[in-house]
Structures are given as C-alpha cells and as structure tokens.
Amino acid sequence: MLEARHTGIHRPPLYKVLLLNDDFTPMDFVVLVLQKYFGMSSERATQIMFQVHREGMGMCGVFTKDIASTKVEQVISYARQHQHPLACVMEENE
Ligand code: TYC
Image (cartoon, rainbow, N blue to C red; front, side, top):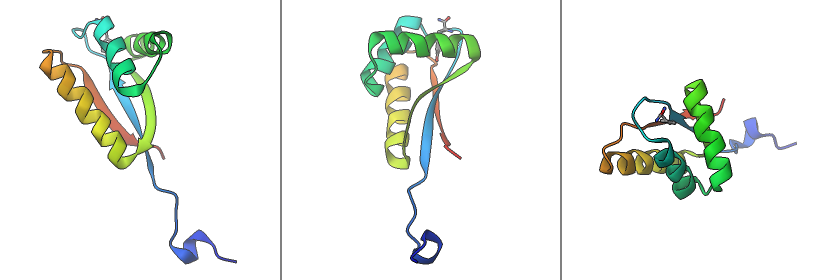
C-alpha cells in the first residue's frame, strides 16, 4: 500500500490565526476587522471579540501558511493605519 511516509505526500500544515487582547483597540474596530478579513457575520464577530476581551486570545480561523500570514499582515497593517495596537499572530495547528 502507498502510505504517506513512503510517497512523501502529506496534508499541508495548517495555521491558526489568533487575535490578542489589549486595553486600547476599540471593540467595534475588532468586530469590523473580523467581518472584513475573516468573513464573519456581525453576531459571530461580536462573540469572538468578547471572547478575546475576556480570555486574552481568540481564534479567527485556520488556514494554510500563506493565507494565514497574509491575514496577519492585513490585520496588523489595517490596525496601524488606524493607530490601534491590535495584535494578531499565527500558530501551527499541531
Ligand atoms: N479590550 C479592548 C477594549 O476593552 C477590546 C479588544 C477586544 C481589543 C479584542 C483587542 O483583540 C482585541 N476596548
């Protein structure tokens, strides 16, 4: 049988994109970011924003490496354009 370990064919590693809490970025800006870059409804975006606000961190989605790093760049660049310190990182999805 052809197994992945023999063929060298594997699923691409996936990466979580995470938002981190801070004391300065306005709540409505975070909701807007989640809608604009992650296609969330305003209800879902509000849930995730409050989760980040309460727990310190929350997941925006899981993507391949290139897509995840593009999302992180877009979020950070948009936040800086608006002078907000919002932090967004990616992490390998074990
Ligand atoms: N803690 C922020 C406030 O009280 C809101 C916030 C939520 C900021 C999520 C960042 O990723 C974040 N205005």
